[in-house]
Length: 122
Image 1: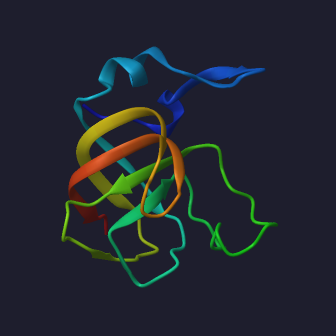
Image 2 (image 1 turned 30 degrees about the vertical axis):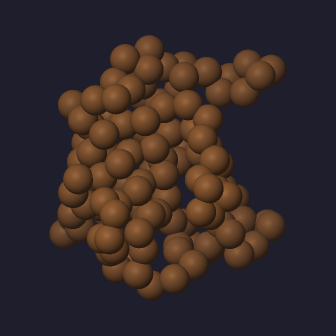
């Protein structure tokens, strides 16, 4: 099932973002998303942040960076890595929704995909 950044949230409240019905209905299911890799901290990655638009700055490297609301953390299968690219990518994998803090990196996310496949779109 295809999932677009515009379909992630139903709005905002005083408590934060309101997850869309489509997003919560797809939790635990296989999805496909297209987007861009946020500039990484290292050249080979076992996870990355998928964004709606290309970013010029590493969001972890500057407190002034304009970090978009529409982000999805992509985890690659254990032992797999990918080279960073500025080209758009297509991600296919299992959607996981809800607050989560990665034990290894301390990265906090609300929406994740555990990727089966990541392809560069030419």
